[in-house]
Length: 435
Image (cartoon, rainbow, N blue to C red; front, side, top):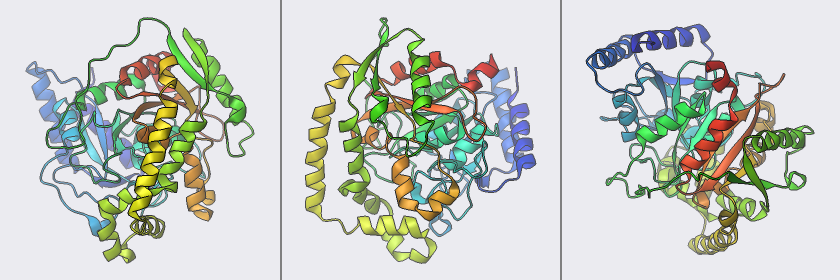
């Protein structure tokens, strides 16, 4: 069994050998990380139950780690927290050792991973492709084997999109299952802490250890008792003919192959109309819900425009000018779409969608930052708005010029374990390597 000291030393060696910019914002001092690992090994030797002993952890830099600055991708915003965010404390209490803070789209505003003064995290499969965002550094740290587990956040897809772009597993729990205390907000009512890992079991175990109600977080929720059905799961499949792959000629065939892999693990499939889900997703940035980003950091952005990424600054500043009546209009539209989509969950347990239409290049994003970002959120934006949970899973091996194909499994709130049970049976490349 790998000791924590061995795991941390190996992680630091990999980071030092890699040396590519854009992944990390702040690293824990080597002696501090090794000392923390030694403490884990000592406690484990005494018989303390530490389910994450021997595992290393990266933390997106909008989540607090005591003793390290929280920048949210903006140096002028930086502050040094006195305590860990509860999700970080839960994982370190279980034996994981924090290695450092990872890069992100500034203020978690973006799905692209290029909106940061700290550089662009390199896509491990193709240097010209984006890493996805906003949890770009966390995804790349896992995909390159620098760490075992990484924390991200996910409001519009910020955990799922980079997971798809880099070929790792991304779990977006039910809203409120993990506390958001100690997290710089993007949209408080929609934010989720997400977990990225190389395989489903590691990600799911980390989520379970970090989960639980937090009386100090008004958005935290108590989880009801749930079970995984003993019968074959009912899986909803949208018609591939109506899906968009944004010009990717191989996209439809890739999704069809993924569906075939899912059908091979003892499920029952049902056709599902995805259009009301996608319509709901359009409200996130096409409506007034984006104004919640102004509530989170708008005054800072207004006062420090020269210190803020221009695309991020434009999005947040503009959101502060949206009229109040539009928020009520869009809320009514969302309720109507919630009503329209609710019957789907009477006939299926899981909905399967492409994680992203395609993985674009960095050059494409720089040329059209808003348009390409919107494309990436096609199958992710609606999930938190409709109070759903999701697991993103790579299928097959990496492609010659990019990551492996990826699908996202989606379910109603509190069906997290159902999604994990199916995702675990699909088998990611990382899972097969570890067997």
